[in-house]
Image (cartoon, rainbow, N blue to C red; front, side, top):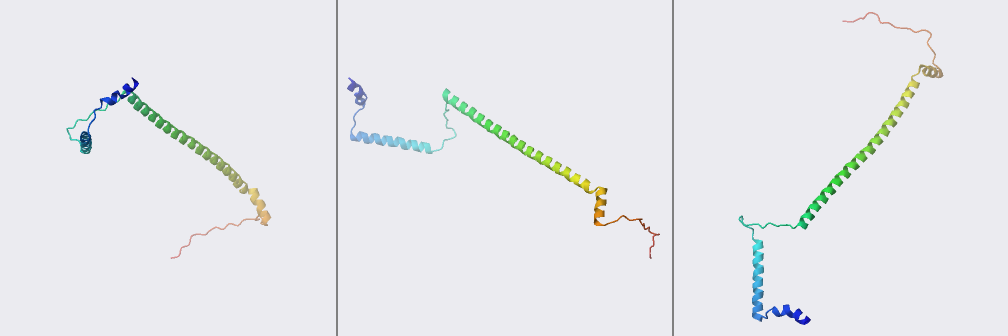
Length: 149
């Protein structure tokens, strides 16, 4: 019984001769070449296009892929802005530290200028160099303006 079940499909195929097989092969080749020709020719303007319908699982897949792509792009955009803000924060911190250091150096230089401009220091330096104070000061005044013609 098992052997008859397995051979049941094989017994339905009619046996053909060599000529019938050759004719069937030619018919198959003719159909294949006709398909190739129809695929190679462009569609006419009036040709009707068939609508492709998706089943529910394909629609869910496309929708979920779109949601995942949108979420991925949103995450990339967020990371770009977050790293940009962090990098700008580090730059700001470095610039503030540099500003504070320059302000400290400026204060030290101003203190040094004030020390060097002190009259007591100038007088002590003049005495060290051997300069003396003048006893009296002479002033020259210009007489009336003389013009030659």
